Length: 542
Image (cartoon, rainbow, N blue to C red; front, side, top):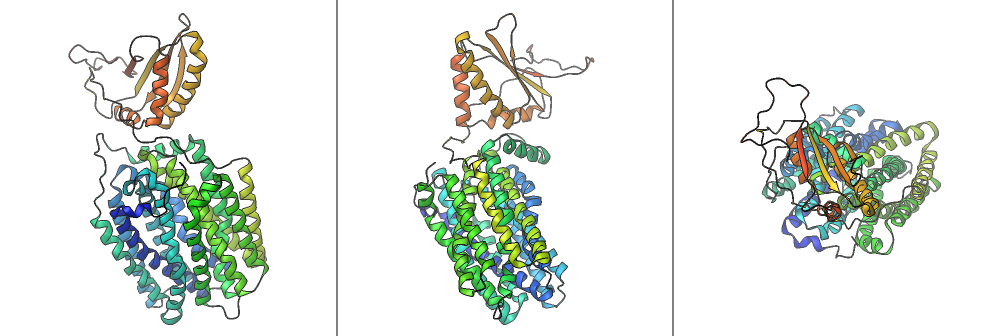
């Protein structure tokens, strides 16, 4: 999908406008909290690893729990999950403010509270990102993702500086309290939003099955695997800049919480410029070149922090770093969203966030340990080299272009009338589809069947095989297994419009009248007298 639409097109939709505005306030509070926590840690300890772990403790929960949140978001009401997450973060932030006010904060207490706030963010992020498709139509989706970045970085340009002022004037406890109150507008906006979710026609997918389905879909989607690999490599080395920035600020004789906030503000200002130019950049360059340039620019900015001690040079380096950050990460995000159907989009985004923030959490710990052992300059230069290597991965695993596939539900499946009284959990189910294929069409048939196999497996089929009749070589049978009858219904309702193109092509090759016959059978591994009894004289082969 070319990125040619107006950056501000999503503002035509009232729900998006309201939630975006409320999110601005929440982002401001979150950035004040981040500055307060990072700077408070520098006052509690000089240990570079502990200082870097403030960043890691905020991102580690996303790596650990994002997939669970994504599965919940795909099988339950996303809005309710987000409301619960917002309330949890508000209460946790208030608790941290009270503990800090009482003077009871230690490095490990601070890391524990930061981890809990990150846990709330892990619960919130996948349903929020997946809700972009509920707030705006598909053609406005890239712009909605970009505007999310604009909103966050608009606050990043002022929030950290404000946080630095708050910490310098009143202390970290006030910064934590500001964050607690900042969730209130977002909570009100979320309570007032009434999304139009499609009606549920089958039983909810069990939680562990939903997690497995998300893992399976992404693992069997080469484009998504490439995005996750590149985002993880980027996060691993890019984390050094943000994790070690408090030490960069503290290294200046005149450094303090205000300088730390100003440097973060420069990063945010650059990110706003990157977000506003994002659409034009993506229209001019391929996704791979956008990714490579973003990583190289971020590497140059990271190296600049290491190779100079001038405050103005450091502030100047943060501008292109912010641009590269938002352009690269928003490209990853949009690629995942446009490559994934709605039934699994929250889980795919969760896995993307797991890969990205997992890389960041590992990177924050790694580069903090390097800074402790060899010094700040060595750690930053090492991270810059890592970013260049991450860019070089593109020669082997280039970024895919935006998918133009129609991933909306095909809505062609009609549940058959059965001759047995099955329950939703009955199974295992075996499905066979028979084809009569002319010899001259065999090559095309096999090509289509390779695509059909990938679609079936992504959507939940197991033990897929293609059989050829030895006595009638022009007769073929496709066979696969599904765990339960409910899973079979889900399997078919997951089919997209693009998937249906393969189905239609196979039907055109079928030489008999009508569509290829489908046999649906339930497996039995005994022959007891309690075997299924047919109803109305029908059998279980349709």
